[in-house]
Image (cartoon, rainbow, N blue to C red):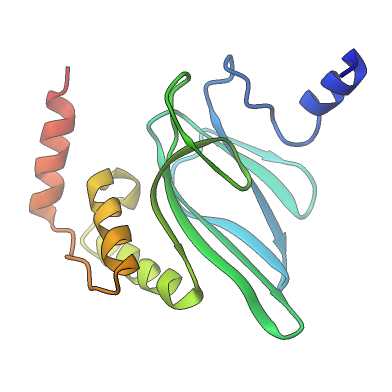
Length: 173
């Protein structure tokens, strides 16, 4: 690859995922009723508008966010996904995910509109008890993934569980 090609790749609209960057970048696209990628929850530290249909949100390591991907054609919905992802630190292992650079620790990965809607209802229930979904225990998101994948109802997240998780997290060295 020539120097020109390398610089073109790094200077494109999607931020490079260089080790020196330390952020996880998510490219969002919004073409009404065609392609709609959005963040359901999470706390971005940087928002870059690329054009009127695309933007990039960036997350610090350890941040948790929900990334929704939906697309349709003339016959209806063709893709609907929800991924709840923890942004990773440099040199930490990660899984790749479309539109997420470099990737992340995928806590929940479901597809199909009925399952995506179930996750939306779960997120709404968590918000209804005044808990920010971005601060929920990663183990709970894994539990929801496993239960819904198996066709079972997940347990509700409680304020007591949340307090216990926050105490454990704050007690880590």
